[in-house]
Image 1: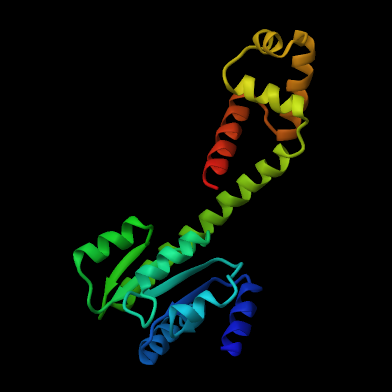
Image 2 (image 1 turned 180 degrees about the vertical axis):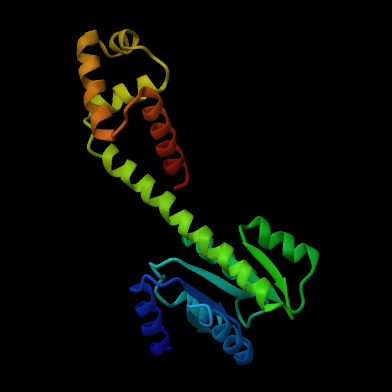
Length: 219
């Protein structure tokens, strides 16, 4: 177990995309590891869901290839636990005993694909490629939102008020009346907050405001 933790920590520090495999069959783990390494991907394999939950989360682009039927904690239950703790690593499910309700449950919960054993190598590689691209895009989106959050934190209380009113559709004169300020003061606050936020137009500012609201609602 310690070796696995060290291996996953090492993978996290590397920029090379990582495929995390969870399957209680050592032959399957070995075969998939060889398949992914053959196209230049790093792999880390676990026997149980518990092993994965106790390991550090990779910081590099990654995806999870997860068997549905596992001892103690099933693959579907692991998916729920990962999402509950905020882990959005894309998942490709595999199973030798799948059915339609199981597939629907997994896909509705955000799985990238659901493959029945035995699967073709190319089908697995295609699914993992999609999952890694999904994670790459998610990370890029989160980075953009985090920059907005950081910029938003630099606004003064008055700038926050002006931003909310402007993004709510009020003109400078209307915002001034709402806040009991002069119109020129509102204009100055608006210019300052737009500069801090990196917004070139009011439309940019509105999009940023909406993104920040979605981010706040997701927590």
